[in-house]
Length: 303
Image (cartoon, rainbow, N blue to C red; front, side, top):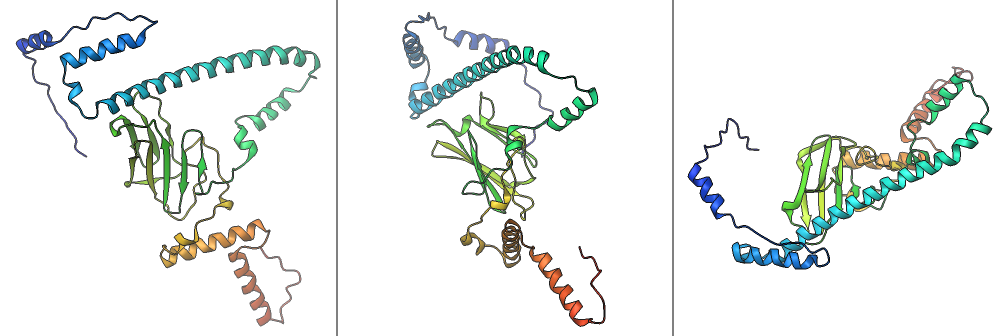
């Protein structure tokens, strides 16, 4: 990464500034709310006369992408405004309905008991009450505006974007423990701490068919399944993770052995049976007992 330091901006020449100001072309048009496209047409005609914008081969796609970005931004702001209004109205109605009942029907409760009850419920979200979710087919999770899948070595994230989006409209910052990605001028789709660290130099993003952002994150610890992508996201049930058999053959012998052991232990645990380590301990104990029949193990306790 190149780092620029001690850069001094050259002094601006007064005559140059005057020439630039003189070169600026004034645009005069009034907006009629009943005919907004007329204003837009006038603006485009002005650009066609006074600039080389229309010489670009990708002009139509670029303009379409800008229009989509602005529309998405406006839609997002409008949706957030409505959600805030709905939440505010809901809280007001809830307080109006619940307050009289609580004042009349609620029995007196000791302060300590109330505090203890508060400790039990504080910070509990709906997702925590529901428990871990079943993973998708890629051993990850499908969220409202993105989805992710994983192997033991990597995490792949897919974020849909408006068709025709250009790479220059994308903002992506991959750090060891944090991920931020989205479109310029809009709230980021993801901006949170990752479940586990990643190898930044082996992670990258790409724009697929101008329709979606694809990110590949290489895990630092390649022997563990992630329970979630970023903090604040619902957890998945890693007991239900099922790696593809075809991918197991691509692993080195040591990693494959570890993965197969993990899968066996998960199946055993789901059926209430001992894990491979517990079975090995039991075999060693049985062998020891068989070799020492003179010892009394009837009162022995084993963990």
